Image (cartoon, rainbow, N blue to C red; front, side):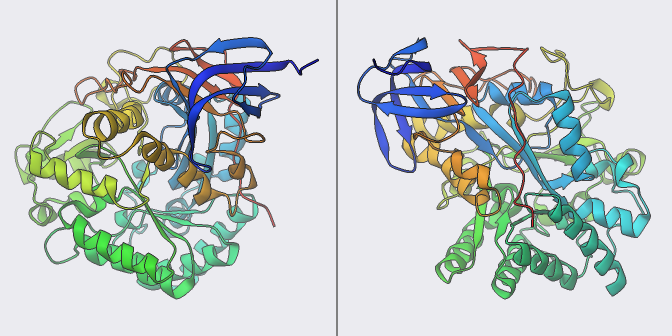
Length: 494
């Protein structure tokens, strides 16, 4: 008698980015793994007919600052099955993993070692156990962003190495928020990463289009350090880091890759970013080099657009960690939309959201377990709509990417970025027997983002089923609030 599987997804268009499969197939799941991808119908205790829909690997988001259950449910409705905090990292790695496991997570999760937290601990004496994961709230310390001594660097490296020993997924480096840190310190961080064969996930210095401190200079440092150390250098949000210099930046990165430098890139499909209003690069004196004015910045706790440099300085002084939306590119302008798309379409650029934590009006921190989220919650629309927006704008509406190409950028490429140091990642990003049953089912003709800057928590539509480890997190387009199948991704421990 034929084997009876736990679950079968029947007659969907199965897209596996590693083998190139793109055909109608039947997918069987047993004990959290894919056990068959068959041309013939399969017997199962539960059969779900997905005729006319796509069955793809669940999306892997390498760049999320929003790893609470509420935010992760919103991401699941956007097709995400794994969300990782790799750019900033976790201030206390073991505690972050323990807390997530005890509370439960609807999708998979993981963290890098946090260079910024290690630096805050060494330079300003902050206790990592008291830090929130939103590290920009702690960037008002007097010394955290200044050049340190060789002994300071050694102590920072010791902290990072201890986190790598515990299974961090790399080193997150927010050097763009501390532009006066020495180049030698960044070099030493990359040497440590090379020794452990893990990536650095870098928010590069600078993003200016005009001297001093151009985006090109910031990326040149990352490339040069990668060349000098052999470390894998991952460039976070190349769209908002490069801005008007995207063409020269991608030319540099492409040539570096051709010469064997390991540099990977990611981007999100929005023209505005979100970060702390006190970020160094948002000082009023720097805005002309960015090509923006204070009124391009929206202080989200109140919705205020500072009318002057003086008012911007008042907000930066009063609430340096307060979140702000920065409208770098006008998405309604064809030329600026084209600039953004050139970042997204650069060879092998991955899709990553840079999702931000939900806040209440006035900047209050929410519990992170509410469902549905409060109707007045504040975040960036990228936190809830990045992947559906990519499918809508780059695949269905413009045809700039084929559907298999877009899926590869959201699944296989992120998995391959991780799998050298994380064995579990080799079972993700694929629809093959033996792979983890992290799967999304969606209608390519109707999938769409619904979040906007004015209403950023509206979930995406079109993802009918989302499975994590073979368990439904999204069933028939609705969240299963009781589902907490998310598991930790950790690096290989020595």
